[in-house]
Amino acid sequence: MDIPVWQYVLSMSIYFILLLFIVEYMRKHYVFAKWFWIASLFTFPLWLMGGVVGWFRWSKIISVIIPTIFVGYCRIANYEKRKGKFWESLQKGWVLWIVYGVLFLNIMEATIKDFTMGNYFNAGCGLLLCVTIPFPKKFWRYSTEKPGDLIVFTTLAWNFLYTTWNACFVYAETPVFFASSLCIILAAEIYPIIKKKPELYVMARVYTLASHLIIRSCIPTLFPTLMDASSWHNASFMKYWGIVNFILIVPYAFWYIGQVRSGKADVSFKRGRVNLTT
Image (spheres, helix red, strand yellow):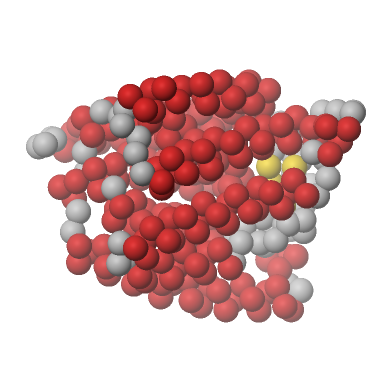
C-alpha cells in the first residue's frame, strides 16, 4: 500500500506520544495498572478473531502480559508494604529473579527467531544482551518510595544496544509492523531520558510492549492501515544493521565483564543514584 510520508509522520508521532502517556499513567497509577492488565487477558477472543497465529506470536503475548501483571502485584506489595503471606512473599528477592528471567527469555525468544531467519549477527547481539543483563538483587529492586517503581540499573549503552537490536529484529521479522514497533522501542528509550532516570528503562519497556501487543492483537488492521512499513524493507540493509549491532556489543560485553569482575559495576551501573524518588 502506498502511504504518503505525512501519514507516517502524523500517525507515528501520535502513537509515540500516546505510548509516553501510557507509561507515565501506568507508572503513577500502579493499582489501576494491575487491574488493567488483568482485564486485558479477557480480550483473547479478539486475538483469535484477529488471526494471531504461530508459536512465537502467542508466546510473545502471554510472556509479556502475565509478567506485566506480576510486576503490578510486586509494585503494590513493596510500595504499600502489605502484610500477609502472599504479599510478604512478593517483597522477597526471588521476585526480582523472576522478572530478570522473563526479560532474559523475551530476548532469547527473539534471538532464536532471528537465527531461524538467517539474521545471524543480530542473533549474536541478542545473545550478548542476555549475557550482559545486570543481575538481581544488586542491580534490581522495587522502590518503596512513591510511585513504587521497578528499578533496574542497566547502563545507557545497554539500553541503546537493546533498542537498536530489537529494531533490527522487528525490521527482519515483521516489516509491515516496523514503523509502529519503532514507536514503542523509541518510547521506552526516550521516557527514561525525559525523566532523567535511565533505571526506568525496563519498566518503560514492559508497559510499551504490553500496550503494543494488546492493541495489535485486538485491532490487527490498525497499524498496517496507518503505517505499513513493508516497503521500507531491504535485505542487505537488514544484514549490515545486524553486523553493526554485533560489532557494537562485543566491546561492550568485554567492558561489562570487566566492570563486574573488578567491582566497579556498583558505581558505573548505578551512576551514583541509589536513593530514588519520583
